[in-house]
Length: 132
Image (cartoon, rainbow, N blue to C red):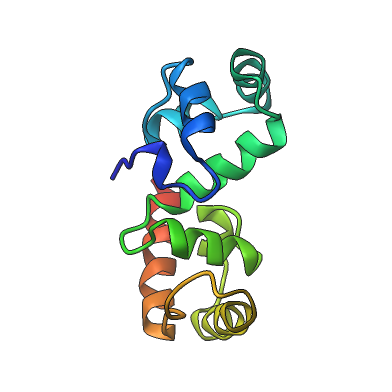
């Protein structure tokens, strides 16, 4: 499911306008434009945004492809060490839920930390996406 880029944590009106100048308005368009190092460099030149920042936004957009993961959970996953769908597919649900709970208790990135069963569903979807 594609979201508007403003749904990604850290993208405000100024950054969204820079991305829009490069015809990037959705998370799917952002993923396509940041598909490789060369593409990120070109997008960085077109928008004036640092490549590292574009990579962070693309990683969050990647995680948001999973049903049930919105901007808050994508940011929480990133803070818990999960950067991409591939990273998520390699995790164990119980350990990931515990880590997210600990991170969320200190950083308050989400109203509530996801349960182990939610993490299990996300991991299963990530494995399907990774294999397709």
